[in-house]
Image 1 (cartoon, rainbow, N blue to C red):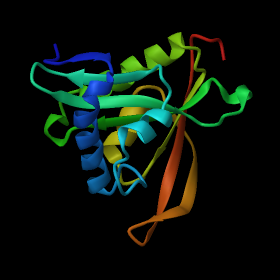
Image 2 (spheres, helix red, strand yellow):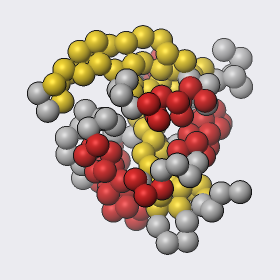
Image 3 (cartoon, rainbow, N blue to C red):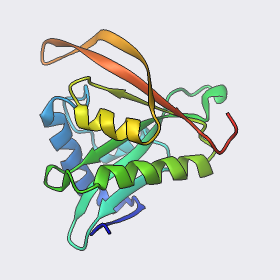
Image 4 (cartoon, helix red, strand yellow):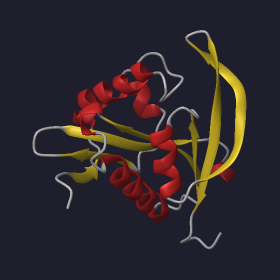
Length: 165
């Protein structure tokens, strides 16, 4: 039984979320972002539903959220996944619990496709997503540079089983 819980994210969680996001940025294998955004920018770029945190009695251990892939109405059920776990909480099942809860909540909200872009070097994230039903659909080779180095991104997706697709 895990020693943490999953709940909906609140705006007052932002400082902890931002710190965890900054750790991911610093790792060089989590995102092309190079700076942690302010709350308003982050908030605007993510769906209002499907924002979760994992926490124990003392702190936020990780977070997960969805971003729209397009403003076009036909893509309203397609979202990109973000899952970040604090370095000190990795290996405890936090990412698994967050992603499973995010999948469940996304389906209740009518999302039919979840997608993720993951650096091939991020073995833990690839394993996490594959274990939750994501499949690789392609590779974007040398799609962008991070710190002057061209990076590939693996594209993964998961289709909702509840919506009959």
